[in-house]
Amino acid sequence: MTPSSLDALYNELKVVSDLELLRDRHSLQQFSRDAYSYSPILRPLLDPCCAELVARPHDLKGVHAVAEACARHQVPLTVRGAGTGNYGQSVPLSGGVILLMGALQVVRYLDPATGAVTVESGCLMRDLDQVLRRQGRQLRLSPSTWRSATIGGFIAGGSSGIGSIRWGFLRDPGHLLGLEVITLETVSRQLRLSAAKSESLNHAYGTNGIITAVTLATAPAEEWQEVAVDCENWSTMLQLAHHYCNSALSLQLCTLLDRHIVEHLPRWCGPYAGLHRLLLLVTADALETVKQLALEARATFLHVGAESGRHSAGLRELTWNHTTLHMRAANSDWTYLQLLLPQPELAVMETLQQEWKHHLLWHLEAVRQGGATRFGAIPVVRWRGVNDLEKLMARCRELGIVIFNPHVFTVEDGGLGVVDSHQVEAKHHHDPLGLLNPGKLRGWM
Image (spheres, rainbow, N blue to C red):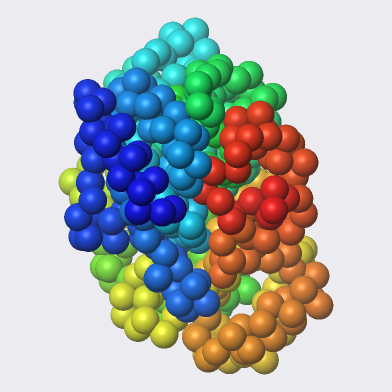
């Protein structure tokens, strides 16, 4: 981006009403970062990346204006929600403009018959869930950053989270029912995509369309109860977790944490007793069964309380990637991996534990895949250099573990490692000049 093209772009946009433009150094650096610092590999790659202009539209007119100006001047554009992603999804590799979507936050429509909701992409997931709950509904899936993440950012950069034990993954058919998208062209188009057409923009890092509104399926609201179960033996806890997941219980979360992780977590999940810990969100009618199964396994049961009674953080913010956050707060030498364990899980876990000792601490999350319960793992790993981490990932593959690599910034390499032709085709239709978040969609390159 040349200084002349930046000046021409700025002069064109500064007359647009309800469009804020920021050029000060602090804003440029602030909005060019997300939580990629979890990865010591991504940090030196992404630290130098910085936008040259930040634009905050307050309506769709402003989005159209920025999209058209970027197309005319051939300036890269990176869309940003709240910047809670961990893989550099919203970091501008090629500079250019950052488009802040947080002012577009209207809940447009909640279908009283089906519970489907249409909401603008900048709406915080916490605020959306509060609106839904007043109507007897709730979000199916949410990240551990749900209080600060936007719904558009979750669609573009997320994949699973709290609720995945019931509802699987975000890209499973039935969650995303439609999108409103603005194209990056000299005369931008506003499109309303069907569920089928929307899937190519799901988890595409905003590389193939500017998402301005989403339509999602929701679930009937539940009064979730927070439970902690402590076990001396890891294999006992894993067996107990399987028992919970395969019983007639309503679960929203099932997290397994090594005792050395529990040691560094905030105490709002109960006192630390030197034991491994299982965290659950369950319905009230399941509490007695959860307690009985824990006692039969000689585990310690603690009903922390109703989730709605929390005035601040709850169990959700001890799980998924928040677990890594808490460990890194205790010692920044910790990083992490994202894995899907083969079944049975225990043998491969014990093998890796024997080989990597205290440099690998287990953190498991129960998910639903293809109708069956599986355990994803987000272990915290002590950083000992790139070669050491590569050896660990190679060993995981040898053992039949699927890796979703959190130390890369391309869509494909952080997922299943294959090019999705539908994502590339959508980019041709919605961003023919290839200006949206360039460098992240390997299939396009």
